[in-house]
Image (cartoon, rainbow over all chains, first blue to last red; front, top):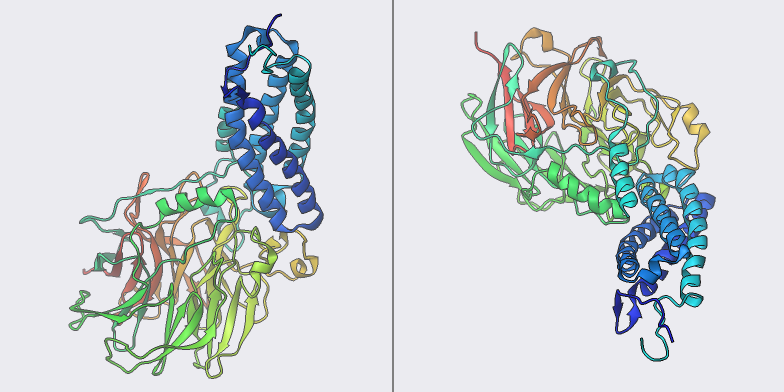
Length: 152
Length: 431
């Protein structure tokens, strides 16, 4: 029986990339929510939360990217999946948008969110919907990083 | 991944690409050129390295000479001359600032580079120059254990010190070299936990009945919320007897150097305007202050120029925003203002204003870092500002940064230099 594509960056068999990605995803979705709340209320508390979530999301995303790249380079069967290229390329774009967004959010008061910051937050989440979907597909359908019944 | 790295690099390249700074001369006077707003991706932060003075001094304009009045001080920010000629030097530091956004970690670090690393004493020193040669022969600690003090004013035998959190009263008799009596709080002023612009400038009305305190805004442009701005960005008028206060004028982002113009007896101030709208917005200024006047901050600048960063807007206030009298160009950070009424300096200086410009940190080409003079006639600015004291910066290094000013008993100009840890004395060059 052929084994599954193997995750190289792992701890006790648990792929690091899959464990890390929920944090940036939650942070960037959260940024969109608090950006909308700020645009509606002009209460700075929401914009401050956006700025923190963007920063934390970006920091953890950096580690998720490293883990993902190690997996990508570590097993040819992962590189051979068409989905992985869309997943990685899309996330690279999302990250660049989030970096720009963090700079926009470092402006003071209203224009730190409206309109550019909010727009970037929407685009980031839209991309993540697609790349996240593909990421889950890679695990649940192509069994990337999933242990085979016989171990490996 | 290389793509990501490349675009990251592009972010920084883009950030460096703001509009090129214009010649500051275009923004000096009653009608400054105001360019389009440019909001940065990453504002330019041009911070100079502090290297101290060693044995060098600033450079005085022609006909003037400069010498150190005091050196090795810890953040001297303001100077005040008592009637007997004793010079008070206020050593002061801002209170610690809370961090509400990731940006502030970066900003705090950058601003630390720009300010003196020496911890201030938060006290007032007294210097006495008995023989009037411009070199003090006695130094005492006049008042100690203050709370980020800045403004000082004496009315008769009543001495007032503006700490960042309130104006305190002390009894003073002429010749006293140390005050040990505890201060009595006359009026609390808005301070922490957020205390963004903490220097509280102080002066007294010519008749001595009122005090005027400058209370700067609690943010660059309301990024700490409009609630944090209550009673700030204003000049307070304080009743000297009861301590009761009212807002004399508002919309003044960070008013300092409060002083009465000697001819018209109008209150004047220098104001630090807002940042991060480009290298040439918004010009800092000096202005006479009208009772009840509104000068724009945060909603607008120079009259009705709207700041898009402020929501909700207040068109009712913007409509009555008064444009200031005289622009000093952008980001020069004026913190000191004094009118010249003595006669040690050449006659051309009489009646005009000296301005201490602490210097820019958010402009790719440095601006300020000098003391300038603006001639006045009939109580109004009349002519271009010109340099009086320069040489504070040298390429990308700073020897010092001028702050508040005073005129001593002999008629010389005293300049507090916080980063340089000195007080400079500018007098007429001997023929």
